[in-house]
Image (cartoon, rainbow, N blue to C red; front, side, top):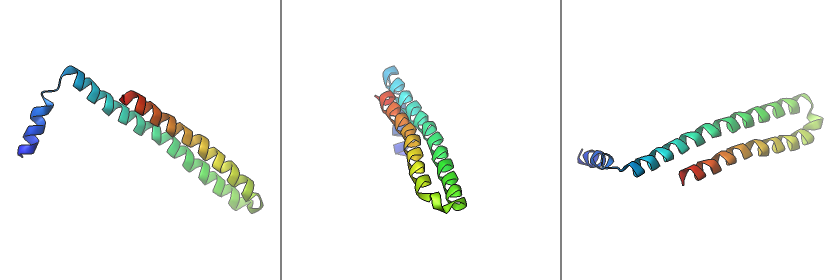
Length: 91
């Protein structure tokens, strides 16, 4: 209980600059979390459709697999861009 009271006492002593930095870090983390949702859904959709396509036409599995990996790479680039923005906002 004493540790909690110490943390609360220190939190009330934050300057305006420290409070602004803390809020920026929280906002950047929240923004990256939101930025990671889109690519996650996109990759799931790409892989699901590729599996469906391979199940329907097994002879084209090689070409579909190559295209799937390209789609995953482009979709994952969106998550990396979100991570870079997170780092830039955090500084």
